[in-house]
Length: 473
Image (cartoon, rainbow, N blue to C red; front, side):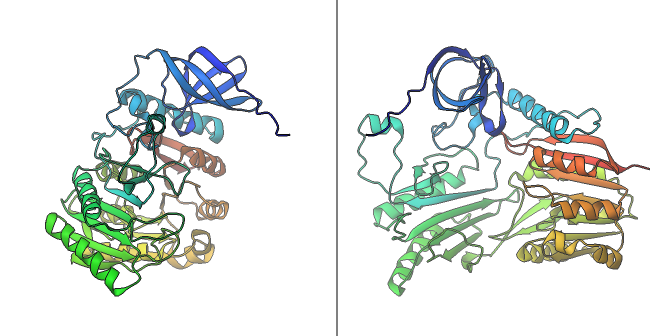
């Protein structure tokens, strides 16, 4: 006999009181903390509990009795379904307030280090169209929203191009207009989609892996250059001719594309790191610019996704570094060397270390393009390269700038930094929680002198944070 599923309660007239991690809001009922998406502090709602543990629960707001004055009207037709931009419903000044608090909470509760007054968060002047890169997925099986299912909507065309539904590799939501990138991105995506519909190009089946069109990547730059990468599964000469016809259409329809590239991916996964990139029209790269410096961005290059706010972030890092022209700087997790090259004019020498060999090649090219002769770059695992022998060979750094991935720094890297004993450390982080953990590890020898949060991703819960540490004398 099947076990009867326990019925979860409906809680009525509950006031949302705060914001938690991952963009969800918080309500408290007795000793139970309830996490709720797509509502804001001050809303009074009915909550349907979806999952319940001993001390917390997850719920959905099924009715709103009172709207908070902190609310904003979502501007995107896909809000609440695609999973992105979860904070559109929260007014931007309120977003900044909660991001600031997120930094404070992490540094105090996890870091437990002595802190100076934390500077007010630097908001993004551009809150729409700020991303310089978006990746779309093709699918032959359209994801139907709850409303579409309830209304028995039948679509003649089930092929779609859009974003994955969160947590579902084979479910793709059809995107008509995304506000994250310049509108040229929407026009290109929709034109390719419509051409593929008209000429009956097969979209990929994400389970059986049959079909041609797989992914579309669009990169823009503040210089006005535009890169489009179309990824397809092509197994015969005839299919290649057909695919080339599509690319020819894109090139002719959008002459503003300065780099039209394609990738043949006949694997069962969407990763392209191990695949060749082919140039169909134009250059194989675009450029970004900062203070007269030009940065080459290739199809696989990492570059901060919000170009204009990245410039502000890098200026803060440079200011915190306090360079006079005489310092040896280590730039850890250097990526394509953007920070390393950006601060090189104010340093004696900059040494960048990065795991990805292709990124290091980009970093060297960027130094060469800008006639920068005082940088050195090394590729490999940070904990394997940054050793006492490395420091003995290349010199003890006066300043270390570190910008690790979300997981933070490996303990071995922290130990080598402590042993290297630079005068200053500038720690740039996209995850204040792991940054706080690392600050605690550095605390025996370093004190925090300045903290500057930066909002790189409006309408999301993500926040960057820059911390200056100075060696205790």
